[in-house]
Image 1 (cartoon, rainbow, N blue to C red):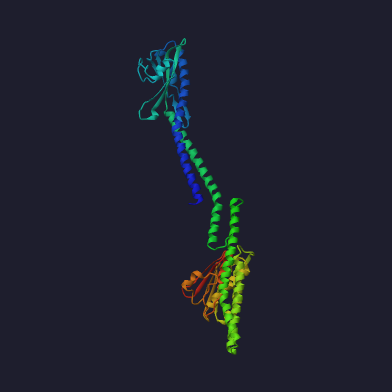
Image 2 (cartoon, rainbow, N blue to C red; image 1 turned 180 degrees about the vertical axis):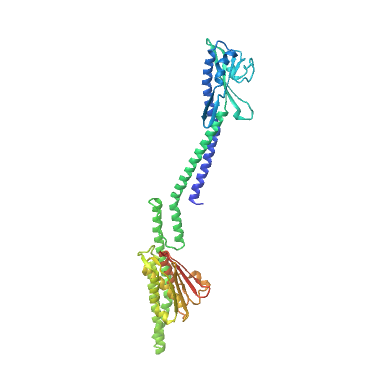
Length: 467
């Protein structure tokens, strides 16, 4: 699992836990809060109404109706949290000192009904805080009605009680809407938090991802440039890893080159040594000339190996081009074919060119070297009087030859250092040309693909970063 995935997983777990805690808090704590708020408001209202009842001459139904009926029928229009209100939604009932019903705004029970067993009435008549909560439907929590009682006094003596009852249905609707608002706010907050977490996660893990991709490319044998990692600990880590890579590769590079050079130099040196031994024996002129030619050919091979190794070493140590300029690829192709004209004439080859203008950005010297290697391979492997076709179209350079093609076992090794196949004349190259060419194209951001053509011969395709 990537670091970025771990960050997001942690955020997801935290979000689920936070959502659960919010839902639990709303469900378990909001209800008692709004019930307590209702009770507090009812207590104040009950005492105000009890004061009005005390102003009546006596606790009779007629007197209480005169005090409360007109107010209970009042109409109005209000909206609380989108809950519309047009009438008073509460119940007022008055009991005498014995707990007998004197007045009921809802006419739920007849006058004289004994309410002395109700907590609100009995506690209030005793001088204590009287309150009760009753459901009209047992299984419906929203049918709960809160009843708060206040004492009615005459000359500081409790002569009755006034109870104010209020259903919680409207408060429940308001609470439900408030809960929805809370969840919407939480959802928006979580969404904003998600965006911030993703942004921070990308910001933190992006350098790690770039460094991982860089190390993967290094492991695959490429020479990538160290990516920009900002100015932080990751940048310092990247610089240290680059320095370590260069140091390790420097040691391994030297060891590999020494091993490869020793192996490649062994054959021409052995040939020279054998020829010298035979020449010491003073052979006849024909034999002497033959072995002198061997020595000359071996010397040329040694010189070519050393020169190409030095050039390849320089190219392989480059992470980017030192010189860049606009180059006409068509002109470079024509110049290299002209340089190889002696070989073309010698083998009586027919060159078919279809070249379009193509402007690329790179090092013209290195591009000439790479093109020379590709063209030279195509010409040397072509049969006498064969046809070599060169096509440059839409930033793609294709070279076709009519040679024997590439054996299947060699297709995956074409770019290996010192790996070569025998030419039709029996000669072998240094095996450094295609390796050198690929490094040049890599530095330019070009692609190269060499394979057998379906009509016979070999096909090399170079994909350029044309403009």
